[in-house]
Image 1 (cartoon, rainbow, N blue to C red):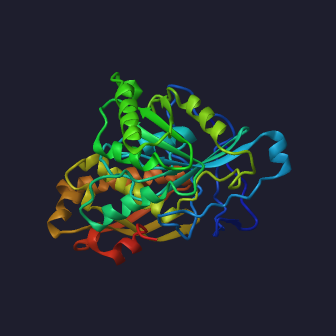
Image 2: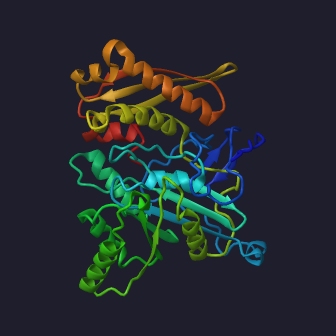
Image 3: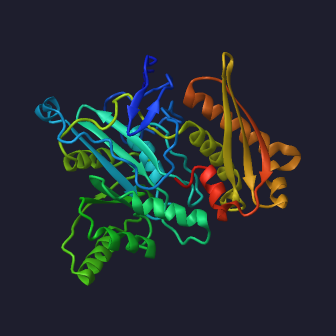
Length: 371
């Protein structure tokens, strides 16, 4: 798949109250998602925006009624909230749908901590996806903020895409989403992800939906589909279904915008992703990354920031033997960021102890987790 660069803009673009003056915008060309078996690009040239929209209910830029030209052409546009419990493959699905990496992924649950918005543009119209944190049992302020962000994402959208792990039986968190969505006014698409793993739990999930609907006396029905975000199987059918559910109307964002995720947050997420792949369950949930400065120089970008931990004893874990883990993470992140932004990137990060940062409202706000 080829990805064309967009010519630099001569003036800022105003989208949903956020002014974009960065000329390094790039987009995914119009067309369908990758075919089955074709993996998304390893990294994307993103179109991040500043200032950030940290989370919660995002303002909709929809133009009421759309244009006559859009209606005549039958082009459609709408917002789709991707929701579900942690670790069901929501971010992997978003990357597959867009054919680009806009959301970090790892085997660790709760990798996604903020809402990420990505746009699919093609001849049929525009789909705006909201990738949300996975709902989970929260024990700290950060977890509660993530849960609120996920639950608020369904308000005001055109379609709710409930992602379920088709390789495992329903869990309490899955049923919780079913109970919430039974009385939601928007159409519901229930997607059984991970259909490539051999075990198919579609009957169990449909029975659970029916039981909850009967208990709540709700006539609400969901559209049931199967797919694999990893292989691409069923993704084109999903996109076709979503275009059939969103209204006819004008695009919600300029068609050369792939994502409006803030650049500093996107860079911080890439560093965190690299650590997640290395540390797995050892440390990730006490780890945060804060990008403080981006200096754009002719020879490349110099990015400065800090990696936050809660205890001094956690520093050696991040460094690894003779600093090898730290150097490896920085090198891998620099490579990803260079591919994403199309310029050489050098990271200057240090490890800083921020005691109980997950419980500190002001730290969470500074990190962009709280609006």
